[in-house]
Image (cartoon, rainbow, N blue to C red; front, side, top):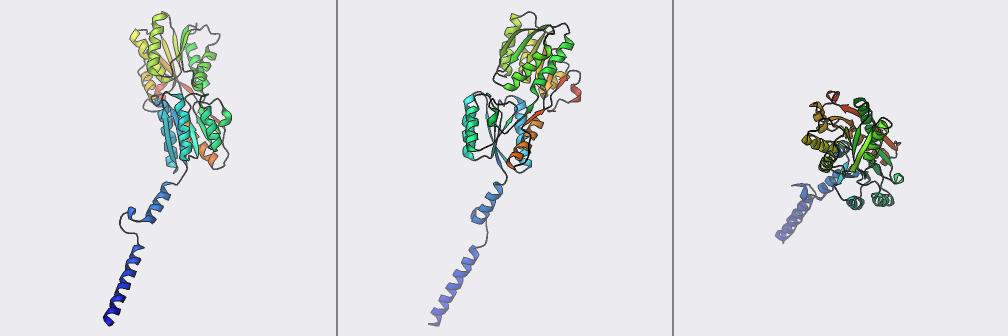
Length: 329
């Protein structure tokens, strides 16, 4: 009888020890439900932002995206990135994806300033603020803030420089990207600068902001027009495409201007390239930092500027050494 009682007591003690041991976290995190919960909480700290950008073949946009991502990570926040290259409708689909993911705010650089309205309306209905960067949307009432470059001035300084180099006026080609307000503003600024100065626009064409299309169309213009004094390009990739066409044609008299201030163009300027003379420079790094600063102010209920225009200025063959060629200014 005593043996049976002792046996039962030992069994009860053993069970209590086992149950007590189960309360301890041992082994890997996967073995402990408490550790999993703590780990998930750490991962979810900070805000989740969305980013929708364009044309990653242009290093400007790559740098802008990286600036936003780095600034957010440094402050303990997360960024869900969506990019696209050619289809305007994809951006509206991506907006729906970000809404479903539960982002707190969206950084948006639209492919088409007007077609993005559908997506903006969806974000507005979901109560998700939009920080519009680089290229302004048409429906500004659907965004909280815009951060970009003074694009009109970026084109204007190119026109002012051309008047100094060709004081008696001349014949010009314009290589544009009609769907992007930023490029339109640059071309407008350039045209205003050269107005009533003896310049004639021989032709203008939309090259969708792309280098290869710019090169192809520039080849056609060089064959069609024996006299071209200058080419104004909506961005630096366009300028590099035009440059290749001009160099292959041996047209050393043609002057080329771009806008961006990209490392690739600055390297060409530093080589004292005979055709490429200047670029209206901007800073995607500063735009990204100001965009993050604005987004956090919006979410935290703090005061913020609704429109911010970063300074633009001219980099030429004569002053490029002041800015360096290895990165963005």
